[in-house]
Image (cartoon, rainbow, N blue to C red; front, side):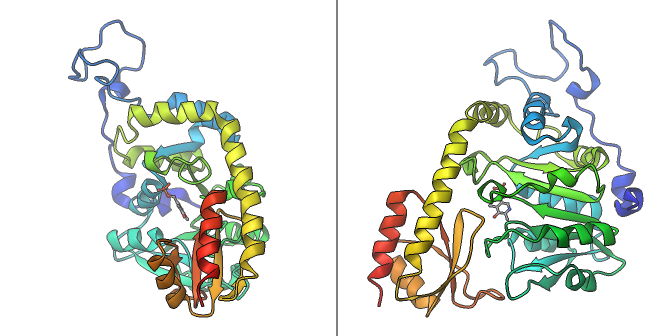
Length: 343
Ligand SMILES: *Cc1c(COP(=O)(O)O)cnc(C)c1O
């Protein structure tokens, strides 16, 4: 892959904003360079624009070099930046599997970039040939999501590897749900494939959706481009400190994940016995895709009973499907009680 030719011309030529913290990086006793207030410490100071302390911790945790990490305001920031860095509006296109997470298309539309789709197989897995078939010389990104939202399955690694070998643009693998999968992250392939970008988030397994913290892992050359284009202070000090604290508590997070995984199998076993349920698909995530006899009817009945799930029934390959998040034991029991009363 030739990264240089993949990047939009205006971004290649961009001279990034140089903030006070970029121009002086040593230790000083008096800081009068950023027009900050001397009052209300520590909130008076701008945050570290490169989030070094946080990235050092993440580097240990994820076994990825510090200069191969981007952190942003949710994964959504990384998704949007990938369009802004690589996709020329009205010229370039991206290819995504279908069905998948809705943000890839919304960001394509916002950035005025054509969005092409390659349907998943009947078993919700990918076929590298089928995806390559949809690409052309203007395709910059292939969007994969593994485990995929809303189908819940972990995608075949061998097929992803084929795409990494064949495709001359970026292959992005969104691993928002990887911690629930009991499978290895694609980050282990980062040293081998320079066109791989892996996305992860603190929103799901880390139980911190309200904090808005996402990560991208890629080559240092790609991360340099993220750094060039992102807002200088894209992650505030409260969020940086919060995530540092969460990393210290990671054993508790591991415990939450195992509880969710064991609740998931129990939840699936019971769901299979409910009369309005037609099929329960396997899940490597913290949600379960379920085919109903009549999803719209079941969805409305559940809402009437104060229970809300995601209606995915109008989505390709998901006819009559509801996506149900695995909650606490009590929430799941309440859901199953209401569902079993629907006739
Ligand atoms: C929930 C989810 C995310 C998380 O996005 P954040 O902006 O980090 O909250 C990313 N990708 C997929 C596929 C998701 O389902």
